[in-house]
Amino acid sequence: MNVTIWNENVHERTEEHVRAIYPEGIHGALAGALADVGTVRTATLEQPEHGLPADVIGATDVLTWWGHVAHDDVDDAVVGRVHDAVLGGMGLVVLHSGHYAKVFKRLLGTSCSLRWRNEGERELVWTVDPGHPIAAGVPQPIVIEAQEMYGEHFDIPAPDELVFVSSFAGGEVFRGGCCFRRGRGRIFYFSPGDQDYPVYHHPDVRRVIANAVRWAAPACGRHPVPDAPESPRGWFE
Image (tube, rainbow, N blue to C red; front, side, top):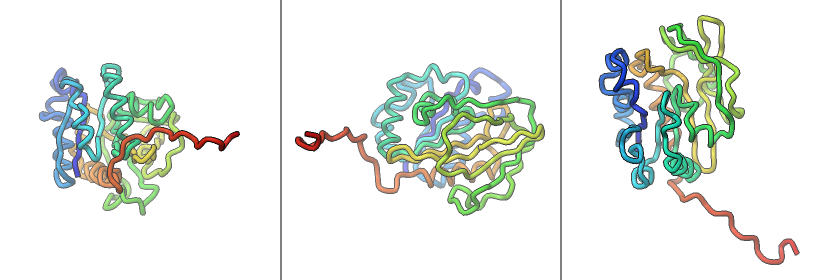
């Protein structure tokens, strides 16, 4: 499997406390989590074409996406390239504040807005579909001692499969592990992972992400986005 990890890589370059948590960037931490899944490459916002030219996307089975403060800086041509690749069968794993990524909103067709509060509260990640492959080997619940709160209402379409919900010390709940299918592609959204906390070093979070990448991989290979065929003459005459 070929996995591409995309990270906007802004906080790590500009904020010392984030660099202390993720000295190799969030993409570096995720690369370590996925080292046993397949061949891993990383890409970041500041690279030409954000590190996602056509040949990279064409060779990617699953793309992971983390962004936060620079969603608007992602070029629309790259968004279209990723969008079409998902419809053609490439898997997409969207993490934490990537819910506001242009490509995620385009694929889901909603604002993907939510409630949030960043006070370092404890998060409990509850498995609601224990038979799902993404939940394999995951404890019940995952305990994250400090994390940004994400709460409902989360403006997304009803997930095709809901794997995890989170609860927070303030009483909020959140649909934080959601599966979608668009065209031939599989999409998984997983909420834990703010830049201010070492969540991507958490072994159970890393297990979920690795499981999600395996689940999202195209089962029958990649295909170009098909054009709508012309209707045979006479059908509607």
